[in-house]
Amino acid sequence: MAETSLLQIFERDGITNVEFVESNILDEMCIRRIGDELSTVIERKGCPKVVLNFKNVHALSSSALGMLITVNTKIGDKKGKLVLASLDAPIRDVFRITKLDKAFSICDSLAEAISSVR
Image 1 (cartoon, rainbow, N blue to C red):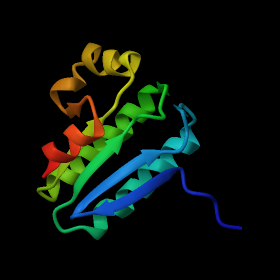
Image 2 (image 1 turned 135 degrees about the horizontal axis):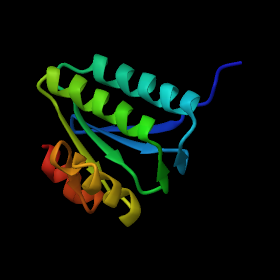
Image 3 (image 1 turned 180 degrees about the vertical axis):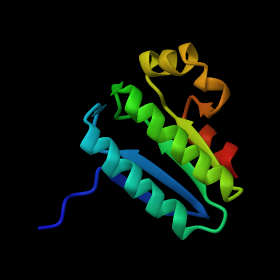
Image 4 (image 1 turned 45 degrees about the vertical axis):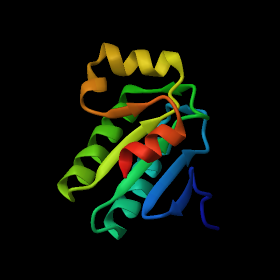
């Protein structure tokens, strides 16, 4: 039996909008699966434009941050763009404290992120 996806992926106008199914991205196996799914999305695109919508996410582990850094690097290597959207205040604080807010483009809303990634 195939595993269910941990991501909902929508394609529109050359932009890949990714929503997380899980609200807590803490488990190593879950993080690995999300990383693999995102890598598959990136590999299919010549110049990927990806928005990660965090509207459903309430907790991230440090391993999840590492996976996001890897995804960001892969997209950058293909001259694409990654934008994060709709982060809860505690998650945004984690990005700020770790200075990852300097490494990622972060927008308050999905609409702002889609405009930003174009």
